[in-house]
Length: 192
Image (cartoon, helix red, strand yellow):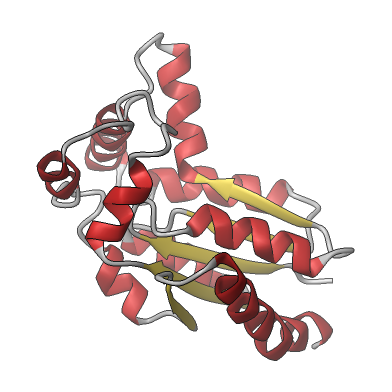
C-alpha cells in the first residue's frame, strides 16, 4: 500500500498541532505518524548543548540550508517518512519550497494550511511554552519573528493547499471541519 503524505503548513500557534491531534483521532484505526523538520533541528541543538529557542531553531535551519543546500532538512524528513510504517504521515511544519516539493513528490499527497489572525495567535502563545523563549513574549517580538526567513513563505505555500482552515472558532468547529476533510478527501485517497 502506498502511504499518504499530508504536508501541514501554518503560522506559529495557528493550530497545526491541534489539526494533527484531531486527524489522528478521527483516522483510527489507521496508523498516523507526525514528523517535523524541527525534530532534526531540536536533536542537533540538544547534541550541541544549545538552548532550544525559536531563534536557535530558525537560525540553524537557515544555516543548514544556506550551507548544505535548500533541501537539507527536507532530505532528513524524507528519510523519516520513507522509514515510517504509517499509512498516513503528517509532515507538520512545511515552510520551504523544498518541503512542498517533498510532499508533492509522493503519489498520494495533500497539503493542509492552518491559519489564524496574528492577534489571536499571539494570545494563544501567551499560554504555552513549546520553546524556552516562547511564553510571555511581547506582541512586537511575536510579530517580528514572522519576518524571519523560515516564516516568510508560509502564506504563499498555504494558498496552494488542498484544505485551508482559518482556526478562529471553537475546537468543536475545528473538529467538524477536519472530519469533513477526512471524509471527503482522505478516505477517498486511502481507498484508491
